[in-house]
Length: 449
Image (tube, rainbow, N blue to C red; front, side):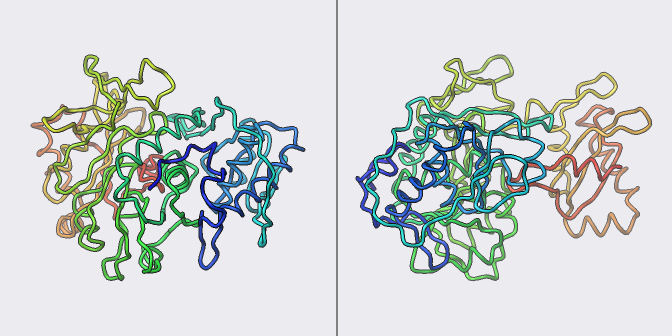
C-alpha cells in the first residue's frame, strides 16, 4: 500500500481515474467521477454567500463529495452529528446552509448533492485547500447542548497516518464497510479519512443489520468499522462474512460477545480508545479479557494527582488535555477503571457511579448495570438498571423482586457506604444505547418516572 495521501491530495493525478472510491450494490464510483462531482458542487457553492455548510448525508460517497467541495471552495464543513430536520431547524445558528442528498424540511439555504451518471473527464484545476482549514463537529455534550469541536484537517490527516502505520499489513487489499455514521469523529476518521487516504474502496451505505454483514459479496475481503452496539446483535446462525479485521470503538464490548464474534467471523476484535476531543489514544487486540491498552506512537499519559493528562500530536493544545477516565498502569500498558466525572453527591457524600456499577457486576447473576441519581420527594438516591442472566431473572420474577433487592443490598454493604447502596431497582432485557454504544441516560431516567 502506498504512503497515505492527505485530504488535499485525494483528487490529485497520483491515482488513476478508474480507481474505485466507493460502491453501493452494483454501482461503483471512480476517482474521475469524484473529481467531476466535486467540481460541479464547488461551482454551486461559489455562488452561495454562506461560509459554514452542514453536511447531512447517509451516502458516504456523497458525503465525501460535499466535504471536498466545501474545503476546496474555502468554506467550512460543519458536521452536526445527525440529519434530523426538526433538530437542524433548532440549530440554525450553527451553520449558514445545508448540503444533503435529499431535500430537508429546513428553513435555510440548501443544496442537494447528486452524482453524475456519466461524468466526463474533467481537467478543471481545483482551488487549493488552505493549510489551516478545519472541520467543525458537534457532540451532544454533558448538558445536552451541542458542543463545538474544531478539528484541523492536518490533524485528521495525521490520525489517518497513525492508523495506517499501525494496521497497514491487515488493511492491504481490503474494502471498508461500517455500521457507524460519518456524523461522528469515529466514523469520519475510520469510514472516510482512513480508506480515502489509503486508497481502499468504501461502502457508501451503512450496515444496520447482521444480515447485511453476512450478505457481503465473497469475492472481496473487508475491514468492518463497528461498535459494541452492533456487535452485541450478531447472529451466529448466519453465514460468516469474509471480514479480515474488525475495529470497534465507543465503549467496551463484554467478553462474552468478544468470544462470540471471534467464533463466528474467526477474527479477534481490535478496539480503539479515544474521543471526539482527543482523537485516537490507544488500541488493543482483545485475545483475552485482560488485554491491556497500548498507546499509539507519540501519545503519552502523565499523572497529575489522581488525574491523567493526555499529550498527543492529535490535540490542538500542546499542553495536553485532562482525561475524564480513570487509568491504572500495568506492566504491559494500561487499563481503564471507570469515568472520573461520574461522581455525584448523595446526602453530602461523594458517590462514584462507576464503583457502584463495578460492585453490582461482581455479584452472581448480574450481566450489566447502569447507576444514576434518582430524585423522589425531594430526596436523592441511587437508582440502578440491571441486565440479569436467565436464572437470576427467573428468581427475580418468582420473588416479586423485593427479596432479591434486599439480598443485593446486603451483598453491597461491605463494599459501599450506605448512601451509595441503590434504593431504586429496575430490570431490563438490555440497557439502552445509541449507535455509538453510549448509554442513553434520558431513557434510563424515564424508567424511574
